[in-house]
Amino acid sequence: MQGTCLCASVKFTLSYSPTTFYRCHCSLCRRQTGTESNYATLVHHRDFSWSAGEASIHSWKKASGYRNDFCQHCGSTVPNPLAQVPYFWVPLGLLEGLEQYQCVADFCLQPSVSPSCPPVIHSYSTPVQSLEQLLKVLQLE
Image 1 (cartoon, rainbow, N blue to C red):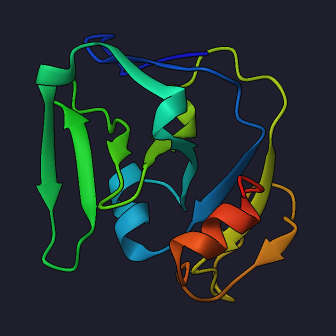
Image 2 (cartoon, rainbow, N blue to C red; image 1 turned 180 degrees about the vertical axis):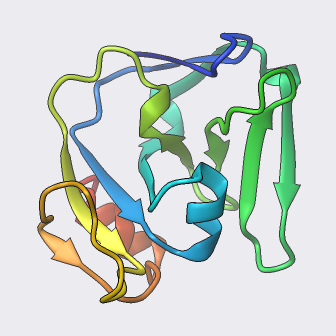
């Protein structure tokens, strides 16, 4: 499966097609996307490879650890490696040809937030508590 930024300067390949994703409705994710949430999944580093444009990626980090990697040419948010664990965070919208997938969790869902997508399996009013929790919810482990 292939993925690209808006201008196709940054390209990457996944060795499989992800079937699960999550949505995060926290204020950082809303600001990052300009919508009600981000849609993302995690991919093990062995299943992820850069095809082009890795040198075009810039990062912005908060002291809290929040990180946004983006293409220096078009500004698209692009995948980024998670700190100290063998996974990449991958925004779902960058993937080409994604056919069947299921939202398995909403994080930071507040009563005032009404997701535009169908209800999910798990719904949390808090951020994800650990990588282990997220991997379990995404059915990756």
